[in-house]
Image (cartoon, rainbow, N blue to C red; front, side, top):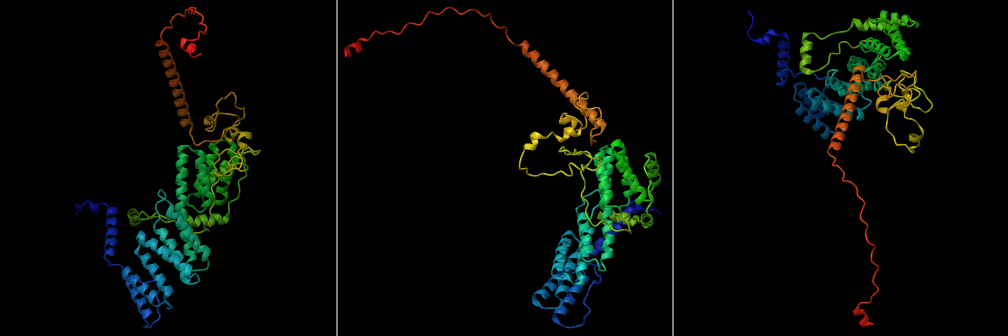
Length: 471
């Protein structure tokens, strides 16, 4: 008999309801009892040990506030106790077990304090590993804010750098691969967006950075293929960069679906086809065979928690331990101080980055030409030439090749039509205004010669009578 309640007809809603029910029961304390990871097994009736054991029992039963009050009593009362380090770690663990955003923030502070004051203890590596877990818990989907994912990457790297010989180093390495899978997926989606939009320099910049920073990303071979296609669409000047991308596919990703296409393209370009790396083939095959995907329960849980699916992350291979600085895109013009732009190098030998600084002299502004104009092959208007269109085609050199632009041809055609329409409208309005002004101007009267004016009388020299009497 089929249930009339629509909730039970949708399995996703059923699983989601089960997850919410478990969370609700946990909120009432029914499933809070969980053994503490690092208890002190020493049997003694010392008062500080009694306080510590009581706090641990409270943590296991979910009474975190009571546990922290007991541990603070131990720390403040028995300042020479041998359980001080464990008490500080237990306070951090109580915040970590609470699990909400406030508790996780307090736990990170407490763990960092523990590493600062007790760096030589074995639990210091565990504390750093839990800091990595704190940000892993708060990671979002690749299309959301990546701040927590970047923090998780930094903290997981710190486990490998600061505690390379601990038992937490190997799990932290896999956590780092999982985080870099999400960050790589974010870059891939951004590059794919620009590629579909037709903004080829922006797409190439995203794909190039992705393949350099996250070579273990599950779609790195796809990013290289799209990067090669981007260089092909930008013109023959970028043939070397296209060949480099195809070469990387053949050499470093021999299990890729684009392997045969890359070899065929290199052959058509009359470029050498490299041999595939056997170690890269074994690693890629292992990672492909061990990929996992969320089932029904996992998908429903991700809807509730918003936690990303990291099943496609690599299980073998060294994760990236150093950050790669993205280069300037190929649409950035070079410096004109005697250097030329090598296509695809992001301005190598010229502009290598964009920044702001204070200059001591402004003489270069008067002595050098505008880099945007010279990069286009001649003196052109900056508003048009910087977008890849010559202001005057007859004045442009024959072999001038403009830099690629993020604007598509359709957008540029619409822009030219809009500018022409505005110019015609302005000319028409100016002609109408001039015609209207001429029609309203009154006729000027005839100019007549002015009448002759008599000469001015000479000043009188006669002395007034009053003045004569005074004399």
